[in-house]
Image 1 (cartoon, one colour):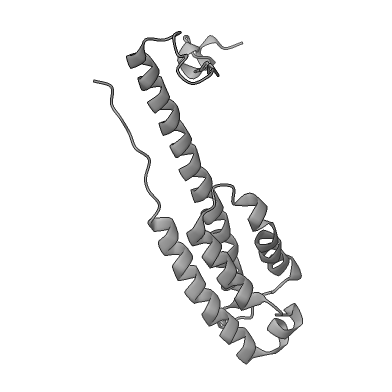
Image 2 (cartoon, helix red, strand yellow):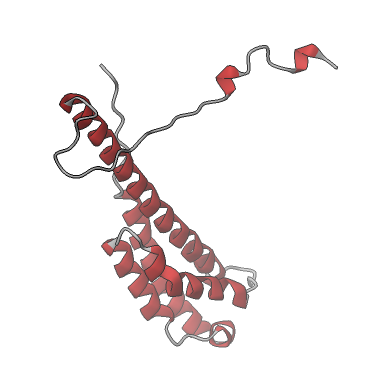
Length: 165
């Protein structure tokens, strides 16, 4: 046992927060003073907005990652890259599951997903592996899609930070 290997005060390493929500009929918020009720209501709405933005951002970034990886494999460099069914299937799976994952109805991402569906709809992995001109065409279209996704990620609102006065 070496006492110096352990922190002397571990309470700073842990944090725990909780919230109590009272569900009542409208106009019956007599448990809290009106100003406290409004403040807590605003905190809850802000927390839900942050959650919404984080969920949208995570979905956009996941889509961007899949498209970037696929595009990297489509590009023609000096040495040929391995193009596997799995990465193509991963994009198709994301596109197929998007409707159930888009819980905050991100219209901008929905348009990008539709564009991706139009690009890869009917595309076979064998066609991409064997036809260089076709592969280059899909690569150009995916590159345009990648640029659109990147700008959608950059346009996301940032988190609001409020300092208590």
